[in-house]
Structure formats: C-alpha cells, structure tokens
Image 1 (cartoon, one colour):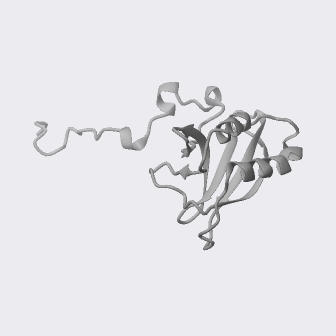
Image 2 (cartoon, helix red, strand yellow):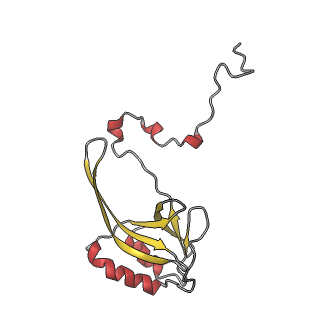
Image 3 (cartoon, rainbow, N blue to C red):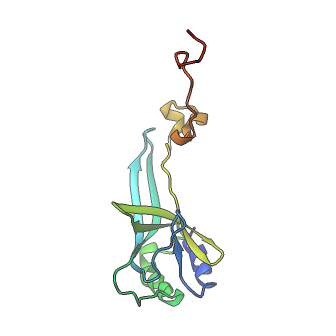
Length: 157
C-alpha cells in the first residue's frame, strides 16, 4: 500500500485497527512511535547497484490501556513527516515487535481494517544466479516427499 492509499483508507475509518497475518489484532492501545523514509542502497548478486525507498512506521504498545490512535492523530503524524518524503508516494512498511525480533510487514486495507501482510525475499538478478524461474519460488513445505527405490515395501528388493 502506498502512502496515498493509506491516507484515503484513513478517511473512511471510525476506529484504527491493525490485524496481524495470523488473524490476531495489535492491541488497540498501540502507538506509532516513528515514521520515516527508509533508503536502502545495495548491490544484488548480478552486480547491479540498486536503491529502494520505503515509508516506514513503527507500531508499538505499552501499558497505557486508554491510549487510542484516531485517524486525525495519524494524519498529524504523516503531516509532521512529510518533509522526509519530499512528495514521494512510496510503499509503506510497518515494523512490529514480534516474539524475538522486529517483524517487517506490508500493509493492506480490507473491510475497514488495516492488515499487516507478509513480505518475502527474492533474487533480484535471477538471470545471473543460474536457478531456473520455475524453481525460484518453491517453498520447502510444498515439496512432496520422494520415495526412494530403497523405501521399505517399494518393490526394489
């Protein structure tokens, strides 16, 4: 979701709620503790220099159970951050404290609820790494167990 889409969605809500990918919700007394421009300059495995820019914000909660973020408060946070974005309408990335580390998520909006979406890594230089495209996105959980010729009762012996 881009910043412009986030703003449009904010205009439609009465309560600011965020749902995690597992279906649970961020406690409704959360804060946005920072919002900023994240610029990543890097070189991929194909030796191409790249730049990636995102608008990032961090979601955090503490023991102040009465705290509630309204759309108006979020618009004020965005307004205070606009000089960093320099008018760029970039993708949003949300940081959220997971059990043992900070999770980084994309953001979607469905039925009045903001949803954190999973992000995945990929090879940006697939034409250089030698892995055929059909094998680039295979998940280990999707691989079926292969029967070897020496599996008991397989008929090989």
